[in-house]
Each structure stands twice: as C-alpha cells, then as structure tokens.
Length: 170
Image (spheres, rainbow, N blue to C red):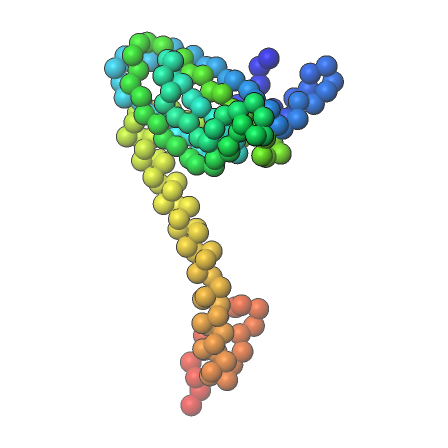
C-alpha cells in the first residue's frame, strides 16, 4: 500500500475500514543519483511516535523504542539530524514507525535531506527560533505584572494589557 508522506495513516481505509492511529508501519524509499562518498544529513522534525531509520541497512537514527504493542513501545518526541555517507549512487532508506500513544499515526512533517552542513544549519536555526518563541511566551506574564505594578504605583491602571506610557504630569 502506498501512503502519502507527510501524512497520517489513520486517514486511510482498507476495504472501507479505517486503519486507526495506533499500530506499526514500515516505509521504504530509494534515492537515485546520489554522489558516492558525499556527507549527507536528514532533518527529522518531531514525530509523535517511536521510530528507527536505516540507510543502506545501517541504523542512522532512532527515537524511543519501536514495538508491536503499547507495552513494547516507548514514544519519544525529539527532533534529530542524523548524518551519513552515501556509499553508492543510490541510498535505500527504511523507516519503521510504531505509535500507541498518539491519536494520529504516521509521519506528520516533511523530512528534508541535503548536505550535512546545510541541514545542520537549518536545524539549528529552527531550534533558535523555537527557543526565542518559548522565551517570549514565558516572559510575557512577567512583563504584564511589572507594567501593571508600575502603573498602579503611579496612580494609573493598565487597561487590557495595553502598555501606553504617558509621562507623569506635574
């Protein structure tokens, strides 16, 4: 069966019956016309599942523990950027995924491949942006509290979290 990636396997039906989000799946992809000896990397964003990824029969990445049941599977949500050297003009990837902890099963985001340094830089930029957003979100309540406190001390009240500072009269 062919399934679109990225995409969830619970959206597919076999004989009119939905596959559901829980289960195990194996994906296979062969890339042709790869420069032998080139150092490549894959950008694997968060997957809501456990997986193990092989390139030409060698494990290059794993996340959690792949299993055939809830008891055997340990999900892990960690982005990875594995590197590998292309040994030949073609590279066969095999990705085994198991999901027993999330409603949707499958690969929900695009995996990207390229030169090691390019993929690594992209991954680092995404991480930096995520950390910036997290810092902004976490600092917002403190900012509101400080502004509210300062405005109250000056005899003014903050309205709806809007911060228009006026110089004190007099």
